[in-house]
Image (cartoon, rainbow, N blue to C red; front, side, top):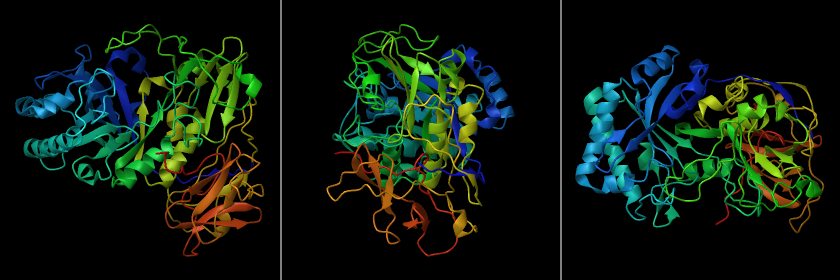
Length: 513
């Protein structure tokens, strides 16, 4: 597949990092100047509306250190295991008022820049022991946030403190279905941080990607990085108030088959045995008294410093690295132990950055700041495209098959209009001639415009099936000289918004209902 090597004009994205209080030693050496916001995790709510933060973290010193590097500091409240009582707190008038007052007082006492609420599943259980109310959680949450914004304004002045949220890949649930309109939330919340990871894992029968850019239709969980953005913006949340969640870790599972016998297929049978992940992984006790065991988590830094990866795109034997074109993610397989690892690397992060920028997102959110290796992933996030020229300097060939060569994709596209000429548009994969009228196709990764020059839709061949995707708003898909582009619909010179690049950018169809 033909790719472009481009010189970028970069913007300064919002970059939010979570500081896990239980990993204080691992944060030594983190360059806080590369973040705009640091969320100190987590404050755990009690039934009466009070909350407890890790007392071993010296808040004043930590805030001072981070702020000296130019980042804002917020307290994050809740999290996966810390949200069990929020539903009941918000339903109780006294506890609700206490919760709001305690947040305001904590922000004031510690000179924080705001609060990040990590109630990730209003209207759903999340962790199995969480309390939830299908009908009332979401409306109660909105009322609480409106009150909190007013309380912040009264205490600190209008707009002086931030309210942000970590959110699931679908908008908040009401009566078992996602909300279709979350625009009122956006009026009182500064940013929503999309958790576009943990999409497939050991809880499923087959292996699959932890954080796919796009899902492969009919394979694995039918959600993705792209579908999450579509879901939230489609429900009225402004793209400029969204940050894209980036996982600085991967997950390991144990397969029941030798994946090399079906090389290139990421979706194969797995057992319920979760292997030990990296050197920090250990037995953990589930807060809901479910099955205890290893997490199987591999921090990116340990994939590198434990020698699993000898460089960002090369695996050390016996591991085999494979790049998946459909999901734009790498995966590893050890045929000796049958361990499968899905993770993100600079190449997959770059693809997500380009996609998020093309959709107008504010920036990125990172879980977590201590998991990177020599800023390889974080520096990739800072290659956030902005309006400006591109300069094509060459091509490379990535097949998407098993790859231990070290070849990487460094291409990118711009997310805003600019004054560059037509010939500077980012070039993409060759136009597909393998698409059939029955929806099948023969060459994975091949592309073709749906209606050349008249529509922003295009088709990509994914596992032998035709998948419809789209260029950015205001552009049309055009074919020229055996390649396809996203060009401005009005015919003006300019770079494509979300230009099609078979190894770095694509737009997912809606998730399966």
